[in-house]
Length: 358
Ligand SMILES: Cc1cc2nc3c(=O)[nH]c(=O)nc-3n(C[C@H](O)[C@H](O)[C@H](O)COP(=O)(O)O)c2cc1C
Image (cartoon, rainbow, N blue to C red):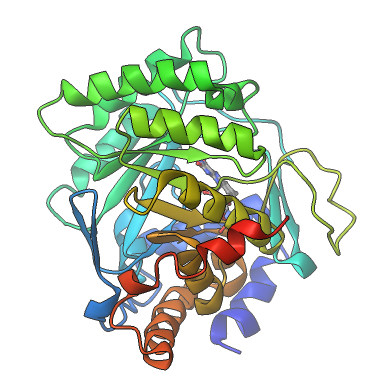
């Protein structure tokens, strides 16, 4: 047991989840957390979408909604950090309580609803860190009351093109009513056409990835795969949180509305990832997210077909030291399996995962 799980976690878990989240951000920005940047293992590096990832382990969107702590997070060892979701105008999100810990499940339910300080605030933070290096993606969304949601995504492309390492077009948050409708074939095609057009008109060509939900059948996924390939999107994140409720130990909060993340999401999101990999073939970069909390679960995502992996809820339960632990563990798995690099592990078990049922 490390210092986080024996001391800090019990203290943090005594207070309500959003206050604990705020305190964690303060600790990160104050530099109180030691920089634990683990030794770099060149076997974990990947070059994808024109970017050099020092390792495949990224922070998923939602922790650093306003880009306030990207550098301290990179300092924990993450190969890339995704900020946001940002919307053009600041918004408060849903009424509290809106964040629930399901401790025995290693899970979280959230219905935050894109609480964030808006484009201008995030832009200021990213400008302040310009030139520091590190891969920082910007996850973009639409204001809840926007009269033209596609225009909100386009506005983000225009605003952040000089600063974002990549964009994530988030069409999969369950907490903005109607947002997930943008995953439908016709709506997605129109959205991506306009977003790609905006991206291509900027001086810098910033890679575009889209982030999808785990809650759709194979037909829905096949439609997305076709549109993504036709529009030349650079990558796909699978997945966001689920609105379904797999069997849970903690029944108290299970009925709360919102997206479920963490351990109970692992299996369904990994199956969705493998099925998507089979649909798009070996070349499109895929980022696996959902329930990663160890080197084994990170490796399983990669074997299922992910080039890169992201996690968030695992950090709530495992603490900042988990990043280094997963990276060390991945290097050990390469040794054990006799693999020359992490790239060689991608898709080793896609067929096995794709045959499973959630
Ligand atoms: C509290 C919380 C807030 C989140 N906010 C966002 C968000 O703003 N945008 C987004 O695309 N995903 C958001 N997510 C989803 C995560 O980025 C991730 O896709 C999902 O939680 C699955 O990964 P995990 O099981 O490792 O947490 C959020 C997740 C949590 C737990």
